[in-house]
Length: 90
Image (spheres, rainbow, N blue to C red):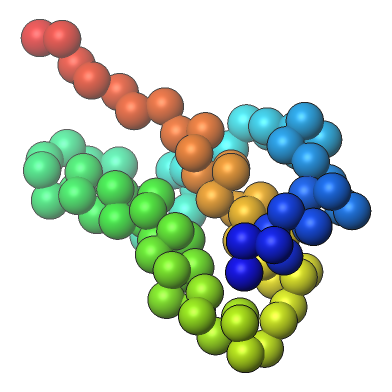
């Protein structure tokens, strides 16, 4: 499967072509704006969910290759990696 990922980067878009657009994570319908560790844990779950979903379906992509699905997951995970956590210092 690594060969397909490399070929996607060579034939389609590369990391340099994917423009990081500012993402408003709080606009997600399940995002919780309240304070507390449970709310923070819920928001963290939302951020890592695309990576977990890809890891679950990745073995199936060997049987049913879908380059556009793989590329879409790659773009979604790239957008999710733009998240800047806020750590209060007080």
